[in-house]
Length: 74
Image (cartoon, rainbow, N blue to C red; front, side, top):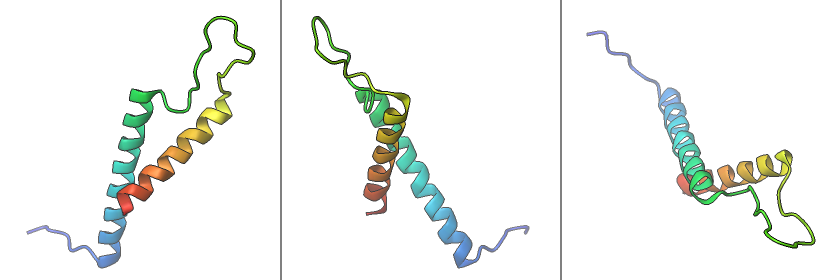
């Protein structure tokens, strides 16, 4: 019987890691299926392009991850 006994701190850390993983997968799903954070390419004669810079895109994805983590953590 080489079963490891986990302390309560290790169990809490494992649970937190699992919740973070769920939040990350949720964020990736939302971002891929909706194009979240990319902006919309304007067709025709548009005054200003709504394409976003890499930094803006990264910021929006981080915000989305935070929102997903809040939902998963309840």
